[in-house]
Length: 109
Image (cartoon, rainbow, N blue to C red; front, side, top):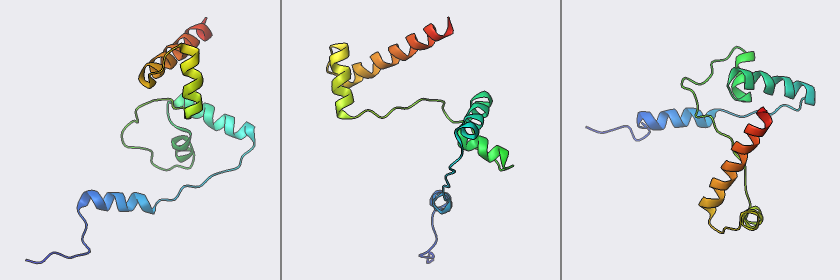
């Protein structure tokens, strides 16, 4: 029994389809970007998913894990290490999370 050398396992076929997708960017006025981002926030989806909804396209089949991200450079970690008086990246991340939680609690008042 010989297998087709071009046949891919089903899981790889899905990845191949995803690789064919292309990302497009829109240069919109801040007012338009804000409106779309606000609608996405209110709907609990990403701006990308909101655009798909506006266009009548299907969104993700399962909800994504909601999270916020920030990119920290080595210099950022050094500044935070000085701020918190610690040098462990994991502990710095915990302190950053505490600062964000404090910010939200103060903003809610």
